[in-house]
Image (cartoon, rainbow, N blue to C red; front, side, top):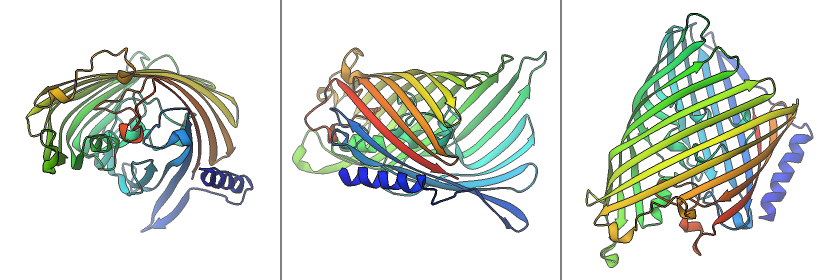
Length: 413
């Protein structure tokens, strides 16, 4: 742990010394301008009790790294192409297995009608499609009730296509922006849900399926006020191997799960005025899965919302805070029911996570920032849609409350 802290401090001191000077890169390829951008972030997390986000945070952990590089080109006034590679290590997740984060061809016929295809960022709520643009926000971690970092792959992108556009409304009523999309979601086996299932003896080999939805947002006549709504539907299948709970000595047997119903509704609003930014979102996620080749069924109802505010004190310093509220209920029916008692009381710490957060951000350079953030969590919300707390790294069980210190530094160009 001490070596990690020392290494992080050395990197910060090196950057402060002005030893590097980062700029977005541009060069010509077949008479077209190609832009190259990138980002790197490194975090350190310490918690007083429970281990969090699959890291050994009760001892302090620096296993919190991500980076990406993207390139794009405006081929014509209407045609743009681009792609981004991404990698991360978050405790037991990611583990430096690189991925193609997104790769898209975008053609805008008119302001009110465009199409894009490839591996396209999913438009869901305020920030799903900008999760990788950490340098835009004051917070080290987005509200985990709506944007769980351990489940990033679940909503970041789909392989398919979008139709989108912006329509100006008459009588100075603002404008409406819409996105309609369909494609295939494919989660990394190094993501949070496969890791959650590994605690029950499962080895997931593949997880994904059809994903489609829409987003509609209104830039209102009130300057700075945006409101919107999103809908997501999915048909997800997971396959792999698992321990037979009825015969533990029999070894691994084939495992599968499929969606009977899998959807999310999300409502959001954001208001910006000068140096102030206020936002709020509500998401309900309903998940009904057939488990173990249809012998069991799991019904999970996940609800999350938050209210956040950020204020820029001066050019290089911002402060922010949010209150994030997450609840989950889960009922298992069928053959596995005796192993999983119904979890329907959201007042219990295992079925909720209420997170009070305060943060500060310092922009040491135009391209480099440091964030210091405190989390004060009531509950641990451990369930089939995990919210950062896992039994594998908490073998002695969970404490009802967790306080966390998050220090994160990021460089972008």
